[in-house]
Amino acid sequence: MILIVCTDDDNGMAFANRRQSQDRLLRERLLRLSSGKLWLNAYSAKQFSPEESADFIIDEDFLEHAGANDFCFAETADPAPYAERIEKLILYRWNRRYPASLHFSIPLAEHGWKLVSTEDFKGHSHETITEEVYVK
Image (cartoon, rainbow, N blue to C red; front, side, top):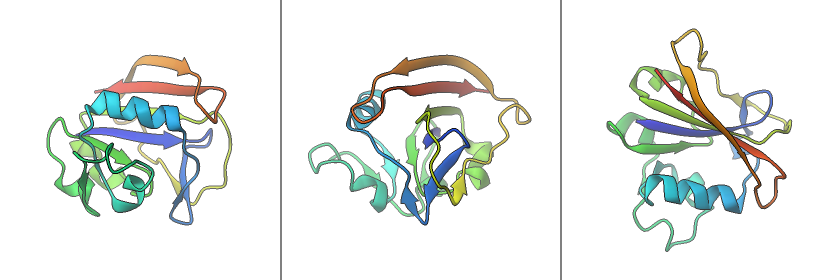
């Protein structure tokens, strides 16, 4: 799977089973990147319009069911138990600190992940969002 996760500066992903933040331009970027085919849970799907989500696979156990090369967007689901199945990781950094109860906890360097690209872009509600792409 190709995992997409948004984190704050402390690797926080969610607080009390809710996303920390969202951004309209980031959503547009995710749709382009995945050609509109994303695996995600019902909570995450709510931030997209019905037209945008027409090709989504909405499944509460999406990290377990997604296959090779499937794009998965995890906001409130812990990806750590599925670390061995991740082929590529795309982290979006909010470049802020938010309260968090769920953190991205996969130790990238220890598991052989290498940063292959990074790009800053302007979001709609965030001055700068950083995209980091990792591969093994």
